[in-house]
Structure formats: C-alpha cells, structure tokens
Image (cartoon, rainbow, N blue to C red; front, side):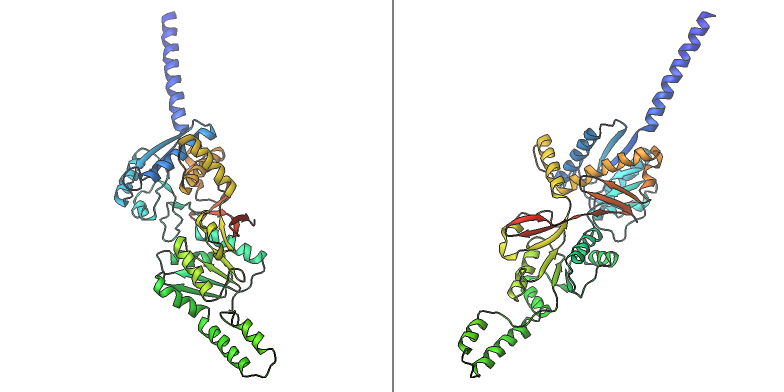
Length: 384
C-alpha cells in the first residue's frame, strides 16, 4: 500500500510540474519582431533589436519573449517570416519597418503588426502604424497657430510620394489654412514657383514704380525717401502671416532660401515645418531662423540616447526609441488584459505615456502628443 501511495504521489508531482510548466508557457507573451537583419538596412534592424532588449531589461518582467525574424527589406520575405510567426502561435509582431514591406501582410489573418512606419494611407486591417504620423504633427502645429493667434497660413507641399499623406493629415487635424500650394523640388523650378506664390513680380514692380513716382515729385526729402526705398527689395505685403513647409533636409532649406529671395523673411512671417528630429544643421543656418516644428520630447530622447550609447557604444536612430516604447506599451496592456487579448486591445482606444511622450491608439494608428520647438539665433527652445 505504501508503495502504491508513493507511486501515486510521484505521478501527482509529475502532473503538477507539467501543468505548471504548461501554464507558465501559456502566460508567456510571445512577440515577433520583423526587421531588416541583413542587407543594406541591417544596421537599422540591429538598433531595433538592441532597443527592445534594453526595454525588456528595464521593465524587469520575464513573461515577455522576443522572436526576431529577418525581412531583408523585401515584401515577399517579410510575408514568409510572418507566416512562420503565425504557425508558432504568435499574434503580435513589432514591425516591419518600411511601408513597402506591408504589401502582402493582409494574408496573415491572425497577427496584429505594429509597424514602425509613419504612413497611414491604405493600411491593411491588421496593421497599426506607430510612427510619428502627419496627423500628430499637424495637430501640434494647429495648437501653436491657435495659441499664437495666427490667422492666415499657407501650406507648401512638395510633389513627392508623401503629398497625399500630408493632405490626409490636414483633413484629419481640421487645421485652418488660407491656401495650399504644391511645388517642384527641382531648384531650377522652385524659385520661380515661390516668386509666383509670393507675388514677388508685382511687389518688385511696386517698388520700382514708387521710386519712379518719388523721383518725379517736388518733395524736398525725396532723395532721403528714395535712399530708403532702394534699401528694400519689394514694396507691399504678402497675403499670409505663416508658412507651413512640409519638407526636410536640404530641400527645406532651399524653400526657405527662396522665400528670403522673394523678400519673405522668417523675422516677419512664421516659418513652420514638420518634425525635423532635431536636425543640428538647422541650428547653423541663422539666416533661415526662426524655424518652428513639432517633435517628440527632446529631454526624453537625449536620456534614451545616452543610455543606449553607454550600453551599446553607438548612437541609436529614432526608430529605436519607437521600438523601446512599443515594448513598454505591450507590457502596460498585458497588466490590463489577458495574455491572449493583448493583440485585440490594439483595436480599441488606449492612451499610454512612454519615452516619446503620450500617445493614443485609435483607428489603426498611434497618434502622438508632441512638443513644439523653435530654432532661433542658433539655439533650440521648447515652446510647449
């Protein structure tokens, strides 16, 4: 009898152990990561994985497991990797990075993808865009326009592959503006287009006509008046008080330079642009300042960058910070939901505070509450 009881007890222990292991496995949160781990964008994939590892260390929770797979920045390879995740029972994936790699992911029915793209047009139902999208940026610009009581704003939008994305953001943000102009980024055409937008030819002629008129008067002070007029480039004002330029890098600088050429100065008109990710080259262009733009919290970005550098000995790009925050978001949702319900919770409205700042999940995209900055006299200043 004692032998039978011992045997029964041994069987019970085995079953208990297997059940506890099985339960532990079920409570694990398995997250796939789709990133370019080879090819020309492999460095981006490496940064994303390192930021995710850093996030896992920081939250100190062993229930989250990461399974990375390579996309090679190729839509077909991305699909193959995603289907492998589906077979593994993974229902939540961070990535892919690039919008083009989303092409075939509607074929993967049982996975929610937290893509790092900031594009929101034509997304499949199982894709959540987590990048800093145009609506988030324009909502922040709208807040600045209202606080500064700016009434007449024009949009300058380049004829590039994201112009429809900008126009969607304008519509969603309900930002009020005076006029919209699309321009060619070719420098040989740009200046002529800006001249037309700013009525430069008419304003230039106004000046010449006024000089001629004064010359033909008997005004005893006409020489002094003419001297002052000749210091000007144009005469007459433009019909707007702010310009929102949806451009970046050297192309942005070219547009502002063209505005200066047509006698529209940042000193007199607000020059506003989209998130420039604290491009330090703009600090050096004092003649183009002040410039205003929305972005993530600069202090949080600096803290993250310093921490990342100490751990991995190189500086991360902004996609790393997005990846870091997504792990925090998943952990936050896991505290509120059953493990199997986490991916579904991305379809409902949620608000979360991460390193980037506060963001809200809504309508298959993550909208970010951004800060607003001014570059002036070679210095960066936070407005709000």
